[in-house]
Length: 150
Image (tube, rainbow, N blue to C red; front, side):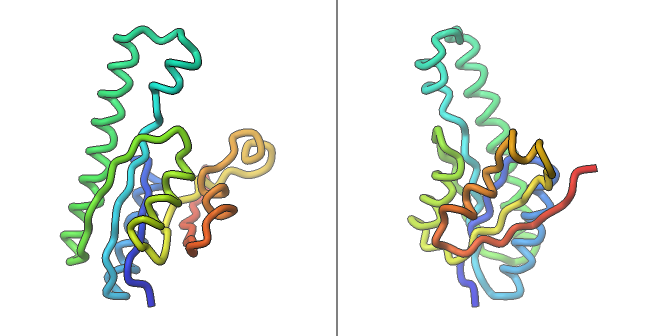
């Protein structure tokens, strides 16, 4: 049924659970996966706020690159272990949900498989949710792997 799954990650344990689920689904379907990590566009924050020193800006960029490489390596290794074809993408964007949708479209993915952090009540309203935004704006089906926070 599905041929190409996009699996966005932020490197969290909840994302890792969605990665496991997405790779298992891909294995069962004979599909390929693309792992995605969206790095926040710190240059926009720097230009807008004007308060970050170049040293802090550079450190944010380096830390984000390290986190992205680690999270994407996790996807690659798990996919390889399960025999699922996998490629990974790292992009920088001001809008995480828009980057997810854009990458799903440009890579001809037919399913986005991502985590939900399971926030409830007022915290979900105040904090928002990239998953909710993807669900609201994507024309590509989205499979949400949900684990409630304890």
